[in-house]
Image (cartoon, rainbow, N blue to C red; front, side, top):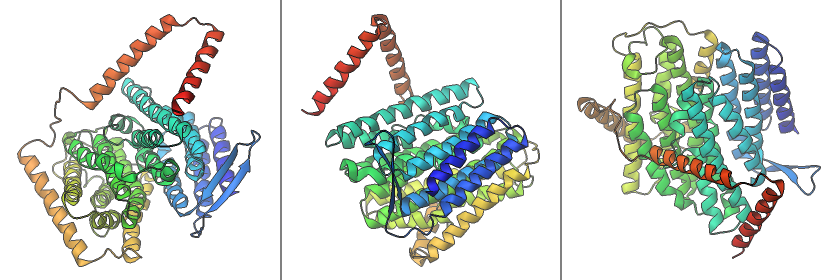
Length: 513
């Protein structure tokens, strides 16, 4: 079975990457990633009928089932490509555990994607959470440690909810637990507080795969396992609308270029959720297509701004400017990413956003989607203009060639997918769609102009009561409860066993009521 061979190669590569040193480590990791991408490509001709491979484990009757269908193959291709390009981009990093962790992360993410059982999906998803935590805190600085702690706290909490949903199984509790856990995993508002810290603090290659691939594992779980929990997807619409608008507004006032992209992850996840929540064929198609397209253009954007940070050592967009003359290829790639995420013709974002726009019924909901897209235009006008245009404010060092190759590949994919999807079976290259796109661009530029005149583009609002403060206070409360319980503990193994038995029996009794 190809997928198990891929996992074996990645795990063996992770072990070897911790042993070999220097360039051999980077070459070994890149070769393993390329082999995994080639292995996934062998599934590209999968037909409409899914194939299920069952592997009997020694712990009978537990059985590992791997499902190969159009959805799992398409998503795994994007994930494998992003990880492969991340390895190529990471040539400036020379710490063994980084490559080992990234290889292991790719292995467990692929297993999660192909898992037919929600239990095994949960297990592999949690393995990925722990591995990603160590990638986020890779630098070991206080900000990265704080971001990693917030990431692992929130995501493990989301995992507990998913596990409880698996245990409970039936409605009404299981669907609520499951969807809440997935919303935490994907960073949807109001569970978004970890996104704005984890993405900026992680190394740039990790930010690219975290936003482009791993965040959307929560979305993938909703699409794949919603029928298992009898989930009413229309319940996702309020979270989708809140994430769409909230993410754009928060992105528009940021100064840190990686935080701008992080908040747009929240917004774009909201757009995908909206398509799923509409529960229509066109909505599902647009959501899945946008999930794939987002992986491509968001990976491109993170790697592009990573080149800017590498060359200048600066992340504050107010301290940048005029870099297009010094970094023409990076600037062009970033422009392609900005146009793609903004849904501008003829790039890939235009196709999926047009499908979703047509899937949304007329009324206020369509207006919210339009304003979200216009706000995206305004936000990325700000990012590109203040980073690459205007006067040169900071000198830059040359960007190595191995960091530019992924930009060329992803830029080509943004255009190529836009042409392929637009001229394929989706038929969105119409005059009315182009006019809608032009109206969106005009509105977005107007929003940028008004925000610039009112001087609110770089003014982060100070709100006394924020979601972040709420979670921080909750964390302090949990710590106090933990200290109180520590005082009460008898530190006797019999005590702990008895406590676990009573807790499990009480929970099972509650679920049967």
